[in-house]
Image (tube, rainbow, N blue to C red; front, side):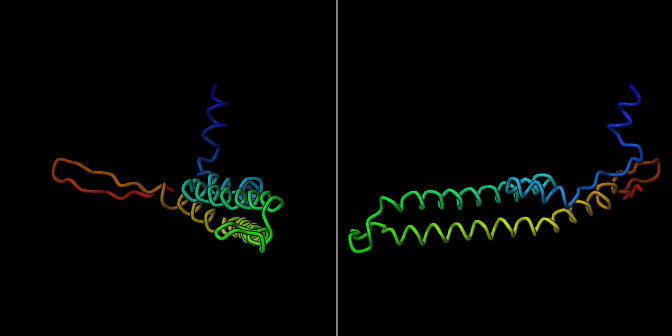
Length: 142
């Protein structure tokens, strides 16, 4: 039983740092997963949503090209084949650009997470009471 506890707590007692390589690998497989890995949940959800909308619009637009009328035959307000092509390529290139950007940007998220783990979490604010005074005590545990 003691061995299992040591494995969960960690031998050195140091905080768990996140790896940039793991975060980038996760985001390569699924957009936003690297942000979830470094506990940046709102940015991960936003990334997943933006990628989903862009990819969905790209697929939808490419599927509409075959049945869309030519530019000369299109009724006013109706999208032509050329309009769907422009929309599909614009969303597709935007999705690819945002995908690459969010993987590249993970470096900052990992650095911030590891900084917080190293310097901010070990710091605690304690309320100190004794017989003559009371006050706040800032404690940094190394």
